[in-house]
Length: 453
Image (cartoon, rainbow, N blue to C red):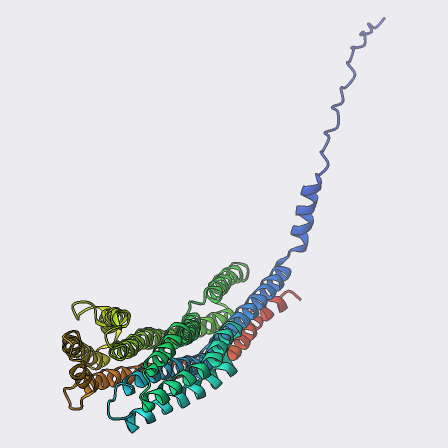
């Protein structure tokens, strides 16, 4: 019988458990969905839209900046500058009227017709300047100007009373004149000085603002340039083309706009800085010099009018002259003006300073005579004619300051005009270049996007 083999025992096959794939997390699904949607055409669209928005923002900011500068320059030339000159005219003519009235009172043989005419002309010019200044003043300046307008009739009334008493030989004339001069120097002139200081600060502030650095526009231009470079790198990597004509053109337009703006704004700012440094700042020093000189002249005359009781006026004279040229004749406002002035103006200012030094010497002679009891000689020295006499020396000093002020004010106007000329054409140029930049960006991306349709 055949032998049967026992069946071989087999082990049941072991099955491996199915591998569990983890479900994608929510951030992972969002990233995958974003990658599926951000294909190359969409990336191009986003890059083009971002560049267009950035270009428009840069262009708008640049146009707004230039328009603001043009408005400020126009204001310097047509509003702030003229207002500052009117304030100078007001102060100067009021101070000169006071000095002239005091000098005229010293005449022993009757009032000089020339001094009377000068006094009346000063008042007429001051009144005209006051009217103009009130029309253009802000609230603070108007308050100071109303003080001048309210007190000026009182001053002129006191001067006329003093003249009437002098003609009648009444000793009270000198007292009325001193009261009038006190009103002028303690109330009217300080108010006029506040107006001048306020208008002059506004003028300088507008010059500085119009010449300021365009920080916002600069940042936007740099951002636009960087975005254009990044866009060209993107297109080059995805399209296998090294250069994109549209984007290269957009970059060239950006560089052109930047260079034009740098040259124009730099030239304009340079002119405004010259007008500020050699014009407005110098004018402030010269105006203060004129104020000190005229107040010193008025107090010099009032010292003699007081006939031995003018110690206070003499002290004020010394203080004003020291303020003008310093104790040694080489300091004071004149020294500051010489340091500030351009070389073309220094000779004029130096000549005026030399006249102030001569004035001090002549004044010492007047005081020596008056202190020695010879009042008549002192008055004669203070009022005599001749090229080397005290009135002629002061006239040259005053004339030199007036001429230097005219030059300084003219420089403010001249530099403002040249600053405006430097910006001419920049505004429409920026508008056109912004449009060209946007068009170049569109031309650069449109063909690349069309390749995927």
